[in-house]
Length: 275
Image 1 (cartoon, one colour):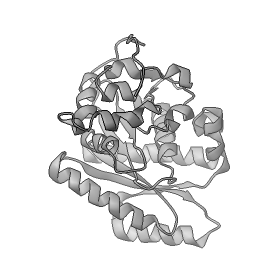
Image 2 (spheres, rainbow, N blue to C red):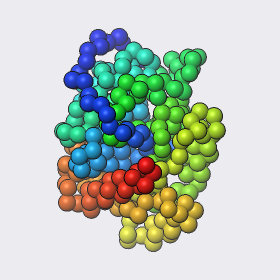
Image 3 (cartoon, rainbow, N blue to C red):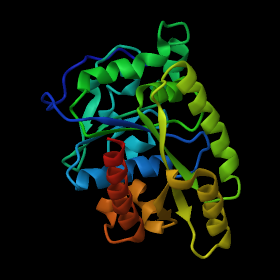
Image 4 (cartoon, helix red, strand yellow):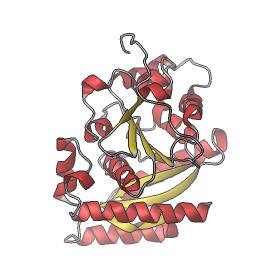
């Protein structure tokens, strides 16, 4: 819960008329590269002239930090949007990348779940907020917390599709099975049009046979839902957040940057087929 803030519009009105796709970047398991994927996929999409908004819906605020937004600049953030204290336009920040914008997060967001526990239509807060910016972006990527919480449910209700980063490790399939149950539950109760957009294999270590075995298992279970692009384990990707930069700004030539550029291209092709 936060002190009251003075709400001021931080930027000029956004353009309209775009066909906006809303993707929840979700996995109930932590440490799978979810925030890293949201940041760098968003940057890669922006690099190919897509207008992108990342919504940092994780109270840890790692996506905000990874995009270089100081804590002092997060006075109006996702928390204020979720509790109805601010409109989403008031929480949109520019980033170093011209076409990439972010709604920031912070520890206040932990309080939103408590404050909304008895609220009417509490699962629809984010969906209702996004109506204000309908048509302003090509892609809205929602970085979800690593848990099935009211925040994650809000993201899944607001989204059209779910993008699942999946670490190439032994317990990967166990983790995703619970997420698939959650997606089914949301489809049956709150958002019938929600679908699985795709699964992105992350932290692949080509020196480790286990990574290939996990990748093969995931492809066997999910078929064409698994992206051809695989995100490698790459030290430059790990270093970039400490500099407040997406890896494409930190080192565009590293394997991680090239993988995210390929992922962006593949995502756009999939979206064209969806249309």
